[in-house]
Amino acid sequence: MQAKNKNIVILISGGGSNMAAIARAAQQQEWESRFSARIAAVISNQPDAKGLPLAQSMGIAAEALSHKSFDSREAFDAALMKVVDRYQPALVVLAGFMRILTPAFVAHYAGRLINIHPSLLPLFPGLHTHQRAIDAGCKEAGATVHQVTAELDHGPALAQAVVPVLPGDTADALAARVLVQEHLLYPRAIESWLQTQP
Image (cartoon, rainbow, N blue to C red; front, side):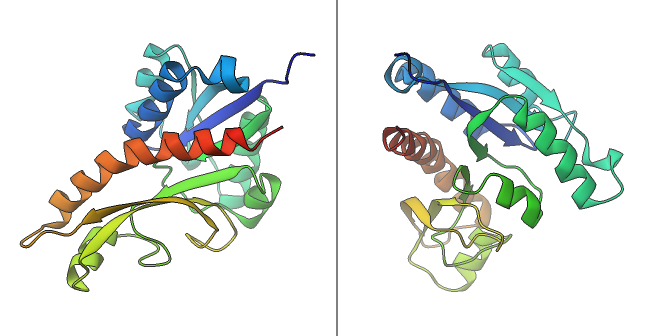
């Protein structure tokens, strides 16, 4: 019996570098033949997100749904759920999706919604993580892939990558080094998740 396709939907707001890293890994590591998994769609809340044409160039369906067209967070999330659900996702991946999701959205995808955050959670949830790590005198920073729960950046961690904070580091320099690790960590974490699925 053919295993049911495990569709992955990726949500982005910008350039989509993590999305591209995941899509490349899916292709190179043959997720479709190994796990019946494929990147079904990339969806952005920013119609001009550079990641949308990038996804199309990689042969992935790409759609935009502008949050500015909705008068509330709840209305946008309800509409976004309808778009995402058209692809019957086994997994919804947040890759630089710069929106705080409503509890209804999180509950709808409970257990199949993951995010990457540029800190070693539970340290520094929220924004400006690299500057906060430097200001706190941390010797290490990094990134965490975690399950999304209703509380921002507090879901169970699935994987982490550690990056040293160097003397004289700026937030931008540290962010660039962390991003290199994110591009390795996120595809690995998704592959591990796929291995646990029936």
